[in-house]
Amino acid sequence: MPAPRKKTWDATLREVIKTSHGFGWSIRGHRGKVQLTRRLEDGSRSSVSLNLPWDASCQSDVIQTLSEIRQRMEAQGLGLKEAYALIYSAPTADSGRLDWAAVVEMFMASREGRRKTTLRDLRTRMNRTLQVLHATPRPRDGRSLMRAYAAQHFDACPAGGVGRRRQLLDVASLLRFAVTRAGAPDRWMPPPAELIEELIGQSDCQREDSTPIKPEQLAALIDALENAGRDDLRLAVSLVGLFGLRPAELGVLRVEEGRLYVGSVKRNIRTLKLAKPDRRVLPLDLPGREGEGARAVALLDSGLVKLPAAIRTQMTAGSHKGVGDAFRQLLNRFPFWQSMAAATPGLTPYSLRHGYAWRGHKAYERSIPVRDLAALMGHNPVTHHRYYGKWTDEAGLEEAVARVVGAESPQVVLA
Image 1: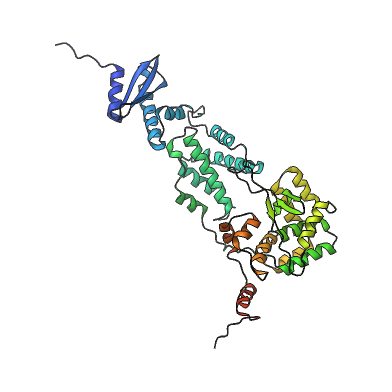
Image 2 (image 1 turned 135 degrees about the vertical axis):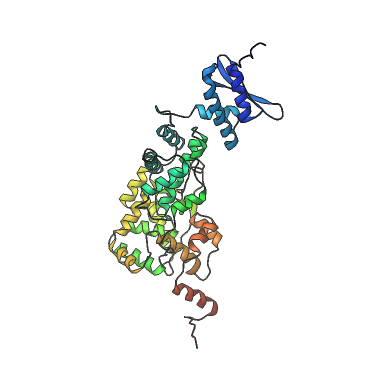
């Protein structure tokens, strides 16, 4: 009886593939390389040439590569060629591991076009992520990386704050990019949103509602600036307070036939390249000081009084954030403002904008509809309700009731 014929290496490999992955997967030699074919239920098929030699030495590599390809196809909904291209293009270090430094550079390149300050902050967070990836013990997946990042970098970052959220969301974006664009294994996908929220934590500090500057306070501030000879800062305060501007919008103003228009400073990556029309703004003058908004516009248009030099420097540099920061610093250094802020908890330079919303709702015989007031301030009604629908004070409540019932100071007396 003749001895049984010994199986060739490729026949053995095909049996292993069939046992591990079922029907529909096949291999053959093609131009000295391994060609992998996937046959679908409808009879259609697709093939890809693997960067593996067609000889007995390729067996373990073929099995590992096929397992990785199938995992990517099923987890990410990729085709055969897409899945292999993702794996084959993954940057690797000399050790054979994924080269995370290269992945970070690919990720940063994909973020080109963002503001310099945004890219600077993102680079800082990516460098921190690389430190965590090379620390001992090494993270082995997305979940352990984000936990280690929080443990190493959140000591001085308050729980529940924007700082924690921004950092973790950037790390999550890197991980998602690494898996879907740089060939990292699926275990590096970021963890569920619930875990990220757990790492962000809950703030122990109760959020204080925004404090609007009241009409009499704004009037006193404008007068104090005039008396101090600070005509430049008086102009800036008048524009922000009477027109409800964001301080950064001082850098994007234009006057046309006595009308004031505001360019856009609130841009993100989705709207950065989209043309957005300038916003027409109108003053809400202080009761008894009518026409002051129009005078501020005329003064700005004439050039007789310029905005403060610190603000103009940032305008020349094209930094919207710098314009807002300069306004805040100038106002915080003014003694009269310091005393006013000390006497009014929560009062900040941004309160000038809040005061515009307060006057629109409460300072006049008729309040401005929310939709119109939101349009004047450059946001939508939902945002307006979120930021301005909650704040009030006892005097404001009494005034609102008095306006309805006709009493000067409504009181509730318990018997």
